Structure formats: C-alpha cells, structure tokens
Image (cartoon, rainbow, N blue to C red):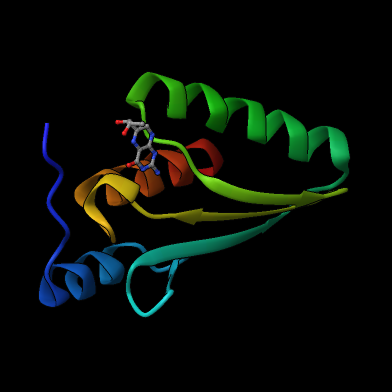
Length: 97
Ligand code: HBI
C-alpha cells in the first residue's frame, strides 16, 4: 500500500495535536525524548513500543542510554512524515498517559 507524505499544513496541524513531539529533519520526521527512573523502566517501555511497531508494521528509529530513550518517527516508504508516524506517536503517548 502506497504511503502518502503529509503536506506541510497537515504536518503542522498534527504537530499541534502532539505537543510532546517536535518536528525534525526539515519536517521529514518527529521526535520525542523520554527519561525513566532506571534502565529497567526504559527498556520495559521500549518493549511495549516494539510490540506496537510490530503490530502496525511501522518501526521507530531510536536511541537508548540507561534511563533515556529518544524516538524518531518517519516513514521510509513515503520519504517523509506520514499518518503512520502520527498514529504511532499517539499510541506511544498513550502508553504513558
Ligand atoms: N517503518 N518507520 C517505518 N517506515 C517504513 O516505511 C516502514 C517501517 N516498517 C516496515 C515497513 N515500512 C514495511 O512496509 C516495508 O516497507 C519494510
């Protein structure tokens, strides 16, 4: 299934709905940084995100050191930001709600 890149106005509108996420890579991706109490909490979170990624066939680019996790979402198939990234960001936020 072809995945469409969001237009600039769609991206800006979605970013307003995702206040904890920031646009990066010249609008081609969104990112959020997380800090947990320790590595175990961080990795538990990453495991839950990994399950969502597998379910949705949409995988984050991420970095972890000890209790910090940084997640970047972009859609390689679309060459930029797509609705898949927005939906994934909302799912990730819901894990911490
Ligand atoms: N994850 N972030 C991201 N972007 C993709 O385009 C993507 C993915 N996971 C799997 C996937 N695409 C499959 O549809 C194949 O394109 C690998």
